[in-house]
Amino acid sequence: MIWFLVRRVLSGIALIFVVTSITALLVYSGGVDIARSLLGETAPQEAVDLRAQQLGLDLPIWQQYANWLVGAVQGDFGTSYINNQPVLEALGGRLPVTLSIVIVATIISGTISALLGIVAALRRGWLDRFVQLMNVIGTAIPPFWLAMFLVLIFALNLGILPATGYVPLAEDPAGWALSLVLPVTALVVGGVGSGLVRASIIDVLGRDYVRTLRARGLSERRVVLKHVFRNASPPFLTSLSLQFVGMLGGSVVIEKVFALPGIGTLANTAAQQSDVPVLLGVVAMTVIFVVIVNIALDILLALVNPKVRVQ
Image 1 (cartoon, rainbow, N blue to C red):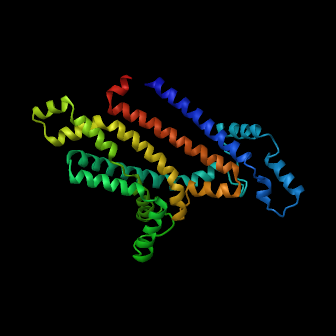
Image 2: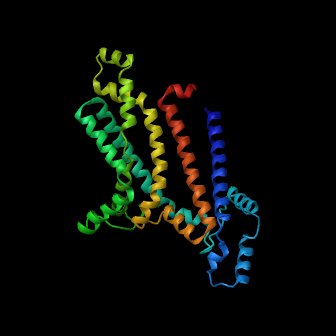
Image 3: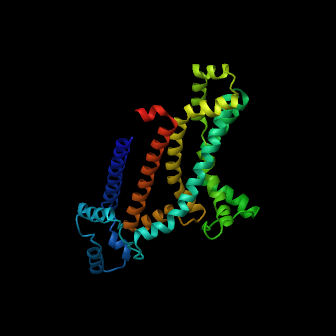
């Protein structure tokens, strides 16, 4: 297990290197004069050349990325071109916002997906078809449109929830919860998917050991929750990790709609302002979280399924 985790960590480091190098290549060679973009179209060429030299933009692309990578390994992700703020400091102020939305949305969507999948697998008929129909409708609704609809109904018309803004958890837990209701709902509706849980439970219910457990007199609830769901959980856990990654990407749109100061908003602003260090920092931090989630998933699968530990 230890060697397996070591290999996963090394593959995660390789993934971070590949993604950030591709991002740097696209940004630096994208045909945009970064120094000109920072100073404005009316700036004299001498000032643009001087700014490019100060930022190291006159160096070859590989050397610019190598300089950034050396600093990132040492914990220095660079400094923003716009406000001279350290990138790690900027990320540290934005990460709690994005993680609050994504983690809460993942937990809620995972719980709902598990419950609906169990119900759909055990109640084959109109209820099963209704659950599958709701899944299709929820997946088909664009998150941006749903977010605008939620703001219109619950914030503007009813006035019961805030339309924009974020309240830190440490300052006001109740305000924090209220500020998350609408953005989390917009993510959860499209993230709920009970199809994998339903299919896995149906497959496990047809196995011999389930019939043996029922013949021994175990209650249906115990058979389903303790034995069937546990053996059917690996595909569900895998899909849950994919949901987390998808919601991490979807938070860019959600943060834009609700004016939330998360890393999605930070990345969008950095891309518009050609703030390369901030953009690379956001990409690197996002990939780091993806790697952490995948490693946590492997550990969880090993705890749930003994066969995984043996393999």
